[in-house]
Image 1 (cartoon, helix red, strand yellow):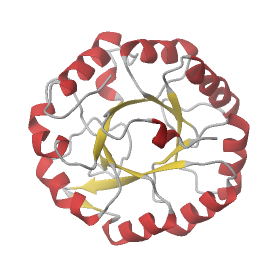
Image 2 (image 1 turned 180 degrees about the vertical axis):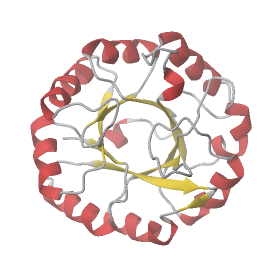
Image 3 (image 1 turned 90 degrees about the vertical axis):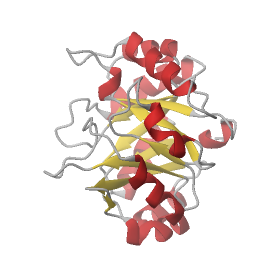
Image 4 (image 1 turned 180 degrees about the horizontal axis):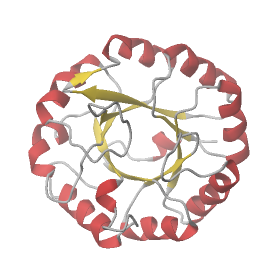
Length: 240
């Protein structure tokens, strides 16, 4: 299977939306301009958690749109379990959204016969990256993309809706050489706050969840298209 990350043009910025649970969600995201859809599995108590069977169905639906790249978003660290999920679902993007270690990532890369794009989340708490001492080891282990996100004061990770500060991002990026996605409180109106971030040559796009939803927690097409337009207007950014 061709590496999903390499299928996207290097100068094209990506819009990833997390937490789809139905085929209707997948179709809405494709129509609203998303490039990647995050499917949660192995996220304890996650509000968008789906079974492996559902991941398989939703991944097929995503590929059928001709636009969306399905992405497994998981806290799992068992290499054999992940290999089985990848083989079953045909997914070629895996987002490791917990504190998995570099050795686990290396083993996962070696165990999967197809090309695999691994997205490793780097968690920032009070502006400091908790995994900073491991970044070079992550790169050597085979991480393809980093995703920068917030960990709250209480330790919550993923879909917090809390924003990263542009200065904290700018401080972290020189410590790695891989492309990165930005998450954490992304909205249609705050791209201008990250002008220095989006101009960085390693910046590859944004990841949204909370901002893509309405007050009832459902995906809202207008929210997603507004985010797409808002970030497309930022200098050097083209999302959609």
